[in-house]
Length: 75
Image: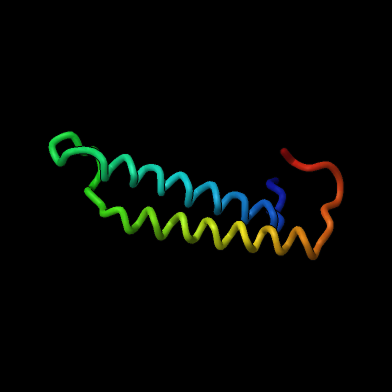
C-alpha cells in the first residue's frame, strides 16, 4: 500500500510538474505550426506556470523555516 505524501513532498512534486509543463509549452511555442505536435500556446501560460512554481517554492521555504526537517534529506 502506498504511503501518504507529506506536505513538503507534495510541494516538490507540484513544483516539478509546473516546471515540466512550462518547458513543454516553451518548446511548443518555439515550433512552427507545420511541425507542432501540441496545440500552439502563447508564452503567457508558461509564465503563469513558472509563477505558480515560484509560489510553491516560497510555501516550501516557509514550511521548512517553521517546521524542522526530521531525518536525512530525501535528495
